[in-house]
Image (cartoon, rainbow, N blue to C red):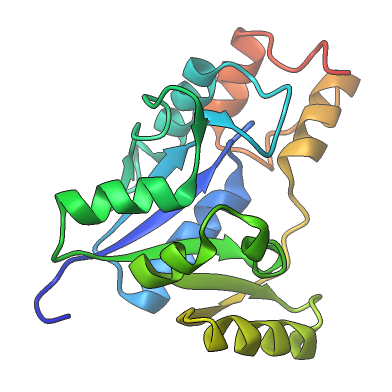
Length: 203
């Protein structure tokens, strides 16, 4: 695509957003030469239940990315009623911006799940997959899976990523247990979680 914009998409529940998300987006922006990365909190995810209310997740994403040039909050999926699907989001974006090339930024684990998503073949047509590969992953297995997806039309770029033991699930558990999370999330997010008393009653 000549002269088209190169835009990354970081989707997820962001429950909460953490430093691993920000590092992945920064590495993708740097290594794939992305003009912008859209942080796109999910609305009603059909794959996850018991997710924190949308507005609080949106607030945390907004706080986390406010000092990062090139990162932008997108509310496309939060404004949609019913379940949100990546293929529908990409259809909407491509219709609105036909000259933009979208790069869907994912962890390596998503390569093994994406065929169970709705219309994965449409995702492959409309976006390049940017896959984070950490040094603790089985590179051969990832390459084999990537080759199989490529045969189905996927275009995959592999990112070099350091290993980061951060997950939203672990952060929620730490908050409930009173363990500090200041090294795992931006300070503004840590303050917001404390201020709003989030995750203290997690099951």
